[in-house]
Image 1 (cartoon, rainbow, N blue to C red):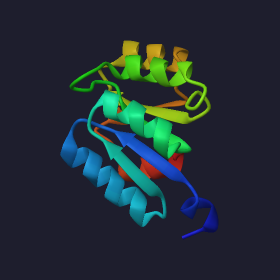
Image 2 (cartoon, rainbow, N blue to C red):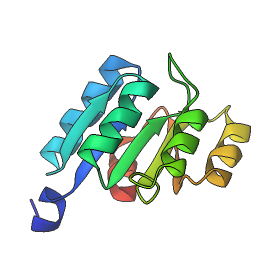
Image 3 (tube, helix red, strand yellow):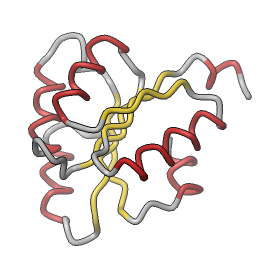
Amino acid sequence: MSAEKSSHAMLVIEDDQQLGETLARHFETEGYKVSLANTGHEGITLAMTARPSLILLDIQLSDASGLDVLVSLREKARTQHITVMVMAGRQDALLQNKALEAGAQDFIEKPIDLDILTLRV
């Protein structure tokens, strides 16, 4: 584990609990400090308190649109600088464009290939 990775905090906002836990475990083994939120509201709150350097954000959450969460993060001074990678299915091409226009730095297609995601992170 490199010193650079060990100092990085990551937030995963994913309402699929199994996928969220898989991502958290994977990136913890890669040396990241990972927080996990299962709702958009919880994700915004954790982003404000944990202040991660990267957020993996599901575009379709049970309580909110991932786009709404992204816009909310971009409107707040404490979170507007955080790198956000949006996760969604290939069929969500229109959402991909909207997410990038709203300030996401990258778009990850589901189902997620952990090797490719790790390289992009």
